[in-house]
Length: 467
Ligand SMILES: NC(=O)C1=CN([C@@H]2O[C@H](COP(=O)(O)OP(=O)(O)OC[C@H]3O[C@@H](n4cnc5c(N)ncnc54)[C@H](OP(=O)(O)O)[C@@H]3O)[C@@H](O)[C@H]2O)[C@@H](O)CC1
Ligand SMILES: [K+]
Image (cartoon, rainbow, N blue to C red; front, side, top):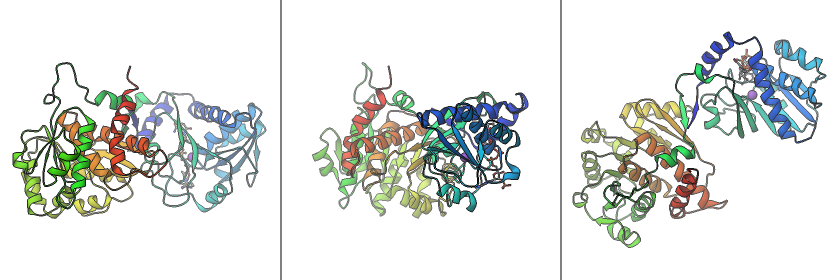
């Protein structure tokens, strides 16, 4: 698991660390890390340009320029606020033979030291003009300038970084926005930090969480998943959600609803009934995709909420909650619910738009509904009511296709049925879902059924990291 910390916590921790380290040593350590990565990226080429802002981020860039000069690299620096440029860094840079210029010449690599942790808003016009004039790849110091460190939002011009070198710990921007290849320079900050504000699961975490049958297991002991989805109009949603659940774990899957014939034809291993009341016992329900929002769908939703097992509520289930908040009364407050809205469903459910700060939005919804909220997007945010948040960045947008959400809800349902902790279930499902999408797409459009079919490959790929 990779932890990420908000600027407020990073600044407080850095202040404590600074107080007990020799002056300037942290900045030089950070800058040395930047110079090392720059040399690697230069691969023998010899011209670097620095864009230097008014704060310590610019100081890092100037000190990096100093170290690069000592390795014989030609380094040019544009000072965006000459009177506020970091004094020691500038003096060292000049002394080592670095050249201050009004405009960067042709270079092999550009270092973005415009702004770091104190960034607010997009690049200002002068910085934006210099950035636009650069054709070389950018190496961002700490984070790409113009991107908000805590939300990853860009409200105007920003640096498109090929590589970012950050220090001490990762910040939310590194998971919420595209920072290129992110490298971390450690300098002993971790003991000063509280628990992370966000986490990003790695393959090892998911491999560990994913249910693997033991010698004593049978189809019941691994958790039975119930799928309450689809309708006469939308049988496909039922086929996809059930199929995803069949493929995600080796526990049994029961389907209940109007698409029983279609599901049975495609997934003979599932136990299908036409009515929810005949479904039999399950350890979790996945409810909503293609279900409709009429009275009979409401009764299905109430039934699963009263069943006393975890529920993944998606699509029409979310719309029903928005239309009729009294449905929540059916829920046993001690059983977990995972809600999986996209932005429009979120707005319906919460009566407000998601806004720029998607993490805060997911946290608000999780607290309001006492549920795990998985807010779909290119970066999916998963928040639990206790305030813990996991993020999953998808590496490709091909999976954003019709039926993709039905597949996700089936995977979440089967992890909940296997007893996986709800936040971990939702985050692991999101990871495997996006990986399946990437594997299936391989550079071309894919239907959701291909994404679903790639779930076993995605699980294999995740589990391949375990010894
Ligand atoms: N602390 C530590 O231990 C270590 C810290 N380190 C480094 O320090 C960095 C933080 O430095 P910092 O706090 O000095 O501010 P920084 O981000 O350089 O901003 C400077 C000024 O820029 C301005 N500005 C704001 N937004 C802007 C925009 N969009 N476009 C243009 N300008 C904008 C704004 O000033 P204003 O003009 O508003 O008065 C702001 O005050 C951190 O990211 C890391 O690189 C490392 O050395 C390791 C040790
Ligand atoms: K920067």
